[in-house]
Amino acid sequence: MFLTCVYFCAFKTDMGGPLQLTLCFAGTLVACYAVFLLLGAVCCHASLAMVTHMYTVARRVAEAQANEAAVAKLAGI
Image 1 (cartoon, rainbow, N blue to C red):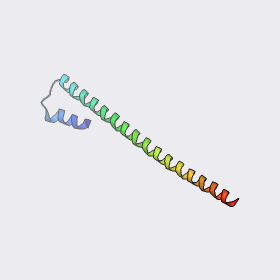
Image 2: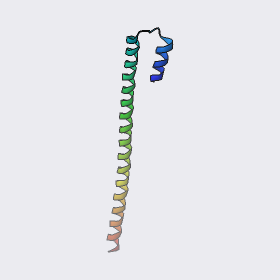
Image 3: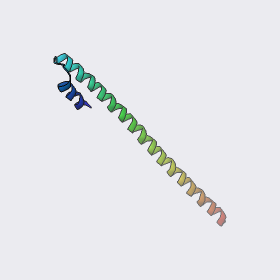
Image 4: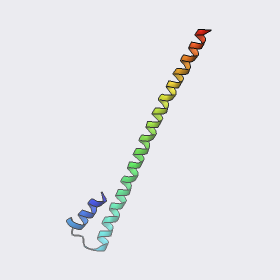
């Protein structure tokens, strides 16, 4: 994303002053950082959802096995 900005600022625009280039690069850096934070938040939420789902399934399986063992123990009495 930032390399695209460098390309356009260097070759496609008529910006020549240091202030114009600084503003262009600063704005692009802020946008790149915002995208970085957004993607990090999405990945963190997706990982949390996956781990929560895995532990929920594992807990249900363990509870089902414990219930089956309890029923088998009572049936054996």
